[in-house]
Amino acid sequence: MTQVCNRCGLDTRIPNITFNEKGECNFCSLYDTWSAQYKPEDLKIIVKKIKKDGKNKDYDCVVGVSGGCDSSQLLYESKKMGLRPLAVHWDNGWNSEIAKSNMLKMTNGLDVNLKVYSCDLNEYNDINRSFLYASVKDVDIPNDIALETVLHEAAEEYDVQYILNGHSFRTEGTTPLGWTYMDGKYIDSVQSKFGKYPIKTYHNLWLGKWLKWCVINKIKHIRPLWYIKYNKAETKRMLNKKFGWEWYGGHHKENKYTMFGMYHNFIKFGMDMRLIGNAALVRDRQITLAESYEATREPITMTDDELNEIFKVIGITKKDYVNILALEKKTHKDYETYQKTYHELQDFFLALAKLDLVPMTFYLKYAKGI
Image (tube, rainbow, N blue to C red; front, top):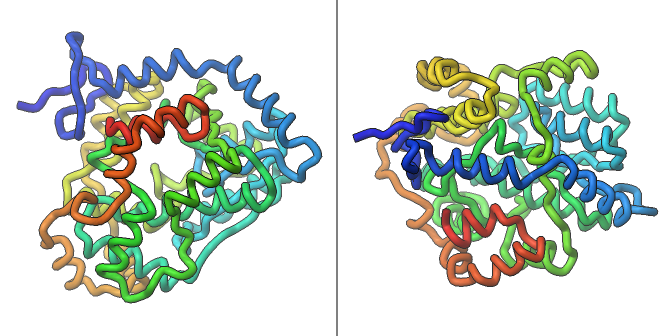
């Protein structure tokens, strides 16, 4: 029988969901914990430390930008707090025109330098194709892994110790482990099995490299929007008024392939990523439960023209895609990953998290497996 959280509306379709005696889910409990833990006054202390550590350097932090609402707000907040960020963008070739325009409007308007990373896009899109044939839900993680990698590469290149992350648990929520998994070994395993191109230019994130950046270089991830009461609707209006920033029509629609990933997972796995973000907004009282239900009442769709563009670039036909949809469903556990290593070393990662050398969220999701 389906059980529904009487607070945020998430139900038993969500992996690892549990409910307390009040009928509220564990994701609501996590929201309450983080809301109490991350206070605006603590961010002021962190910002002061960032400024001190970045003194006499060209930049004191790195900010990933996509042209989306969250990263644009983060860039604005970083300048507002007196930081000197380097904006870093991972260009996977799938940016919408609105996203490209938004990035330039924000970086030019805030007088922030923008560094763009990319790779051989034939190689990158072959990795995307491989993940479709791997028949897993994680079809967009090559994008996420590359972004994480180039942020660290930029921090290392410019001797910066802080990466500012634009995630907000208040507006995006937390994606459960059963709906997404990512690591560099997973990328390599899938590409080795299904790919036509060897990985040469793609920015993959190997465990040893990541630990070097975290433990030796002491590059830290900070999520300023966790400390800030951040209303998405108000932010969109503010960004538009101040910078001419434009809304692109929906969560993740600033990137064509990320939008396709949401569509693909909805069609093949019945997985609706809109539920996670909408539930977060309900918890934060930015929308009502009724509005959340209405926003997901219609299925996720893409036009034939949009799909044909995807198919052409990654090198499959419509018939190929029909066959991909029919493949037996698999998970990351069917491929080589670092998950076993993370779990076996969970005490080590907990110690690193307590020392603020790796994000606590990494420990909870990947090492402990929440």
